[in-house]
Length: 151
Image (tube, rainbow, N blue to C red; front, side, top):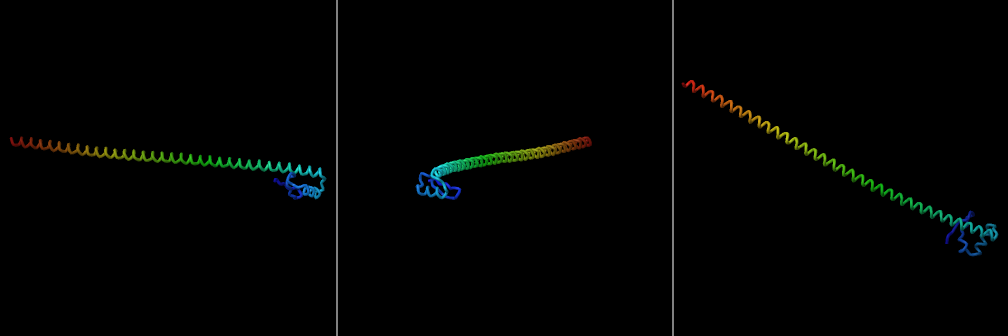
């Protein structure tokens, strides 16, 4: 049964569960007549119902706030996870781009070295060719001179 406390500190059960002798004894202790006692008990019942209603409303509000807080925390966690995943994806893309650029730079450097080597080889080949041509010219000149002297 529902209970409530009087200002004097008595704990009373609601009127429908309290026996008449206890109710009369309570009224005498408080100095109330029968009608005053009924009015007092009715008022206390009303106050108790209102208090219980307010407590229930407060409990429901606490539960609602807890649900909202849990929902907000969950949404925040989901958002943090989304942002972390997005950051990881961006970091991975940036890393891949750095790797691509490094590979491209290495390829360009390799190609430049190959071009330099080919150019050096061409220059060397040209120089050797020119030297051979010069030697051939000199030999031809010598042969010409030798042939002219022999005549």
